[in-house]
Length: 177
Image 1 (cartoon, helix red, strand yellow):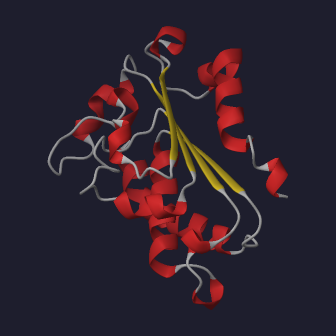
Image 2: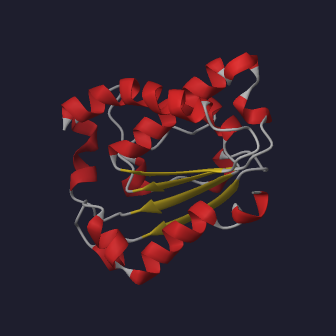
Image 3: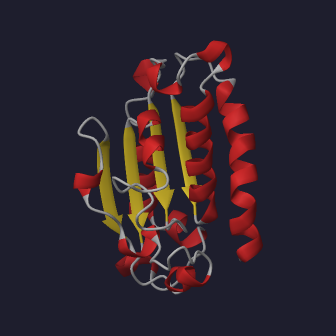
């Protein structure tokens, strides 16, 4: 568990490298589960810092960026006004959070990230007021559907959750092509 957490920044750099190659007019949907959500945050932080080839800022690209985080193993204050990934919001047009307040694995998140210990975003969610007004935000607690499980399969096996995840990722992106 700790090794995956420690590897997320490096994997985020690789994802940012890939995203920099997407044409600015192309819409992008990023779906991250568990530590995949942390990888996507690291990638977006890189995109804010470095931008795209030629020095253009990712936030200024005309293509929309939708981000879906499913049971994210990320600090609950990651996107707070003084959070470590706050700047990554400059790259996001829509953020959807599928949390799970019953997820047993996420309740041990404070054993992984101890600066200072805090709950996982995927277990406790976050308030809308932390986000800029121009970022669309939706959140749902999947505890009643998924239960204590942390694996991705139960989320995708649920027609309701799978539809929510897919819709959040791609709705309104087709028109942009």
